[in-house]
Image 1: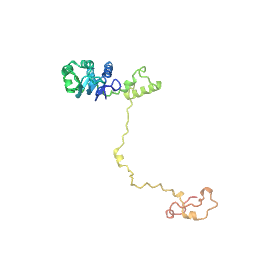
Image 2: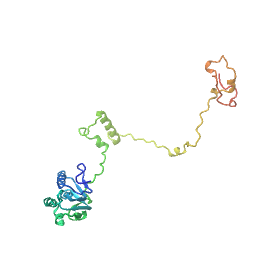
Image 3: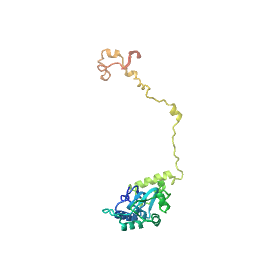
Image 4: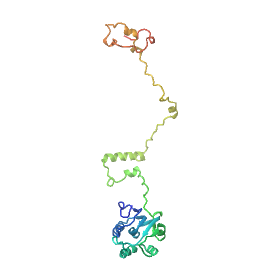
Length: 254
């Protein structure tokens, strides 16, 4: 992330590598950060990016690289002493004393050196913004006691009554002798001894058909009795369900 491409406010501006550019652009961005009271963290910062050192909420990492040099005319490539003086005057006094002056060649100060000169260390405890721990969920009694003016219930009076009843039931309030909660626990031994069917077990056999509903081949092969009621006559093509040897006498009760 560069100095001129910040994230949405109020997130801190983390400068990973910025090689500088027009001093006027960096001056305008620096003043915006100053108005927003934004935090700027420096990894590698060159040329016009060094204006960040003038911000009250700037910090540097110990392994950061901050590179200083004179400003120059973009067309003639000659040093601009006026702009260079303004750039130099924006640095903290300890940094000015360490540099002495600016040249066309880069002069590099590490983050550790700048920290030694009084710049804030981004890695120091409490030096950077850290997200807070997750807030504790309020108890049910606290939720139910919240004022409806500040915590309106879109479901109306019925939902509030239900909520109050549930809260009272779990908190034990409003009952002189709260009803004990009964919990049914399964017997592990009974569960372990219960027969279980595996993938390889044969399927269970269907229940045996009552003898009164079965019929033998003799019933099929004998002529139909025209005197029988229609619902007791065998249909055409009927076959015996069980073997003849399983029955003695007539299989169908008439």
